[in-house]
Length: 398
Image 1 (tube, helix red, strand yellow):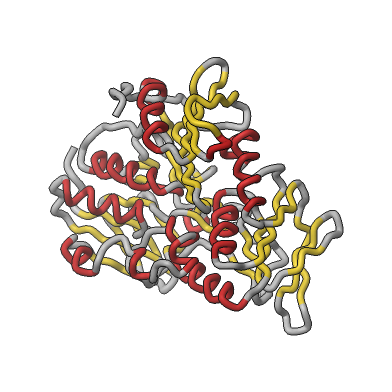
Image 2 (cartoon, rainbow, N blue to C red):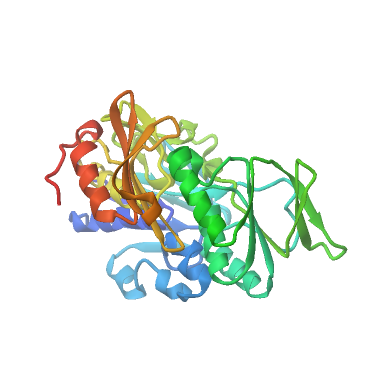
């Protein structure tokens, strides 16, 4: 297969930029264009809910590369332009300003967009957190707010609650689940994390739906109303009820859209069109099922496979899924596919001592590994137990 003479990458965050860098490392010398809706230089997202939000980092520290490094890439960056349409057959992208860009190949790396409550539009003091500007706006709000209510008991909501408590803010967290991160980690580990938040002073209102928001005469939020009738007082509200793949602009493109851009095992969505990162749903040959992963590690790893396949390789993408979260003095690292349905067994350490490693099993088979302040032990367990099932051989313990 001949390498494409030009490649257009839509989205210049970790997945899109990672694809461009991998192409250059593999010797690609063709025309490379990165189109992105953000006006900022590419930045990393995990620090937004932690170091940037707390003020421990200035925004520049979250940048993925310096301006000089980006210039050395030899690519054209088109910033601050929203893609609104793709013609997959001609591999042409139209932007909101009416500009058209095309390539012999197109990579879709548009990531996610946050879900919102229907009642939040137009209310001051109500935030979501997806991008750098969101983090800075929330950080500014937290400097003046006494009471924050977080709506959502997933990873982002829990991280922001932990960061805000570290800043001295009074925090209440409301969510439909019975424990924090229960869908990601299962009841036992989620229960341990929930107790950690309670010990740090977060008030929890779990298992109850949010019915609406209350506001004062000036149109500023004053509280969160639960379906139980209880109103949680707030000076500031953060909505963290999940994200959806940013695929609205691809309606009518000729691509198959479901939970993201549907791709084959090579991350190919159509002839000459690939998807990478949070927006990509692909067939994992090792697991025999379709996956879409929302994490930083996947963005980096998938970019390597997409770049290789653009240049003529025929490589399936078969990663061992991995995500991490930092909350208070806790670092949780999860490998594989932990599930609420799995049986969990602690293999090393002790939850009461805030350090342990655990295995998740379904039908007698290990499906996930978790480390709670035990990164090395979790990595060894991953190498010993998960490699073969994900299409790679287990490695020797580190």
